[in-house]
Image: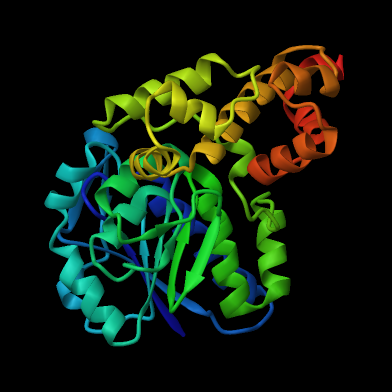
Length: 325
């Protein structure tokens, strides 16, 4: 039997504690109905027996304290809420326990912005990690040594797992069920809980707002110029000339400030504008393409799909109600 410890930190989002517990215990019920032994022993563990959740609206009663667990097989870190610096400080006593359990052979998985607590252990420095796309810029700033993969729903590296944002944590739970219990049971759970088992990217859900939480005023000026001229085909050299910078200096400073190259930023701004048009207007794809400064349909489609994971037509069908009426 695999021992699974779901942590209950202060500031944890209740659903990311109860959701995994419910799905994993349902696996045991299914196996029992088949005349088989339970596969998972699931425990809620915290620093205290009673932990407030959702700003004190609920109280989670833990099964045990982490100090009483000498060895576990899998640690699940739920999503966290509130000011992340304060939340990590309140929950700092989880860190040495997680590190020690990993050294003893336990695997570790973080759900959504539980990635912040995982990253604070140092276990994923130089490794891949996913989190909610809305927290990506803050995460990069706090943990620059971690390789954040913003579009991913699931990462799996050296016995450490992470998941994308919000309810996509259930995709990681299904992934782990498939790994430990087999594909058939994972598929059954996906149907029982109505989770899309094959979803591997959060790209279709990302809203690009740029990254302006930095102190480089000249780069902010460059960002604003790009955003205010979305219909124009601006080159990096033109932008550098406008700012009286060398191209090399502009690209270095831009990447440092925004975590994007200049070209990536231009593409993401244009595709975000295209997404908004596809969501709300009746303009055809070519009209949308021209309005955001593209003239080559193939280049537009390829860039759109690279950023969103969908073709322009697929995106419109998914999000524009006007095309359905």
